[in-house]
Length: 383
Ligand SMILES: NC(=O)NCCC(=O)O
Image (cartoon, rainbow, N blue to C red):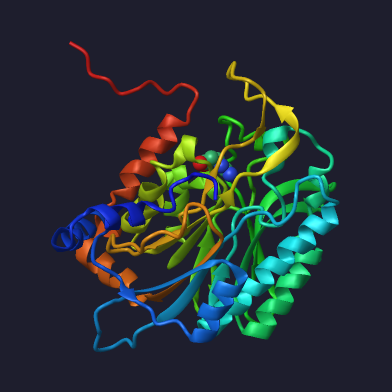
């Protein structure tokens, strides 16, 4: 353990008296989620495999005309499994092995859709700005070894798998993208969704490797509901969430890689706010641990050269459209968060709060069209 806090929730629970914690929780986290009973086989697998396992239920009201639409999602956060100096293929296979164990546990918990963290097959090496060996982690979204690995898991466990990778696009001059591959529970590649917003902040030097995505705001109709993937830095862009939602997403996954010093105070707010604003579920997943790189790099901020990005704080969680949310996974350990959702809550919340009805989209469409013109002048009234 790194001397890092285990989790915010653990600190709250450890210090707030029993009679007050429920009220504190309600104010901070909304309606309390139910606890999902998880099978012994999964609990044992987690203890043997040394990963955290938590399960919650986010319920909806009973309706007369629609049956509940129950889906179980699995969020997986993990550390890299080997030193970043090991051969590329060994690093990839070690991660495959780790994920296979965690997905098997997810299947015993009845998970229907599982999502891994951003660029899950590699260390988050974009801080280094070095090309080799990191670009060698890139794979075809359609035929790469990781997609084949996920297809086998999807078929075996009847599970939709969201696999965010560094993509090498062999059909377009071998260029790189930051891409989530969506694999159907049948094992077919349903499609891919590329990261729309690329960070230019701190050590997040991703813009040296790939460009802003060109796949728009695709929504994937799966056997378990309509899903979309908003990759990492896209969570700071409300219009990005909005467009996935306007295309019908009921669950938006946000596979991420972000560090404490930069974003931890934003983390609990952004995906949760997106669930509220868009009447949908959001699943925020962050990698965990500190990754060491052999060569020092600088951040262009006058500070000393360093060998790591800082601490990836995990804390993966799920938010519901009514603003309630689950506690997060650990800030320091690998983990699997299993959450049972009733998708009926999306429409129920929309009918209650009416954000899509009151959103005045035509007004904003006109104003945005003007803002993006070269001759735009801000509409400021002066005396
Ligand atoms: N991976 C990534 O886009 N990180 C950027 C930092 C952040 O969005 O917190």
